Image (cartoon, rainbow, N blue to C red; front, side, top):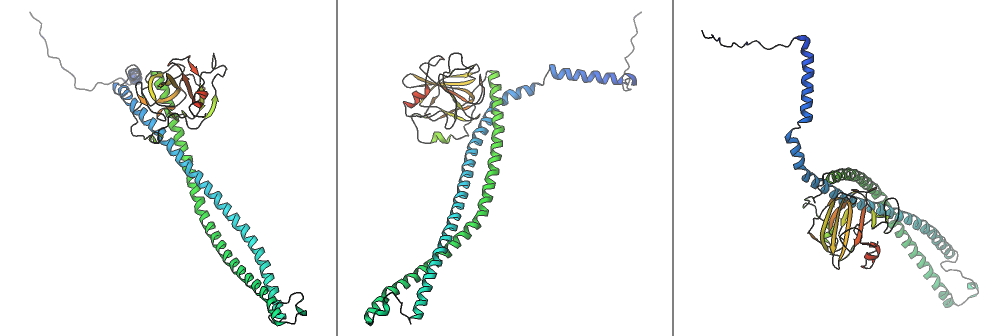
Length: 372
């Protein structure tokens, strides 16, 4: 006799966890969720970070360049305001001195004119001069009077001119005093703007430095696409040979010895902030680009005559191998990648693309009309 199967009946009552075990089950679920998050990260988040990396590099690099230009313009406007304030103060001081001198001269002129007027009154209109009482000839007396009349006319003209000068100086002084308030307000606004852009630039430099260290760690140091940023210097008149950075402090020279160099320093170190534009010293072709090692993010350019220039410890390359560059063209941003004790550009001139063929870059550039 076959078995008789009965249909399975599913209870519609909700499953209930006993109250005593509910807390333990909740804790177990939390632990499982945490393990899933660590061992199995969401696919979308990892992919989006990888996809966003080039765009992030371009954005941060562009921010540093834009803020560097803005900081330079703001500093220039602030310095112009300071010069204007100093010139205004110097002009007010000059007016004060001139007014004092004018008052002294004016007092002397008025005393002289008063003395002449009193002499005329006593002599009935004639100026009494020494020996005039012994002159009986009327013609001779008139001749003696003529110089006195000229003197009185000169005194009158000088006094009128003094009054006009005094009014003009008073009006100019009032205008300067009225303009001082606006000038001070403008200077204060520029000072605030300078502090603001400096703070934003410092934050952008920090982001760029972090991004460059990540790029070196991952071994991917491609030049970001920053076509939207204009290189104002490159648009200027082309120069055959120039400095790799415009302004700097020399932190180490060629041939120096110390704990950082086993066989002497092979280049010239320019202490500059992170994100400072680095420019090709002359026309040439990028032959190699480094990403890691002692030089960090670096670049080597071949020039005519079999010479090579190297730019090391960059935070971002802006040119790629095989690319032709012109003297003065921006090829990277300074940084502190690789074996670096602080933000700077390590610059070398070589006879080959490889390490070990460096010559003194100061003498080399001096021979081409560039002073470091």
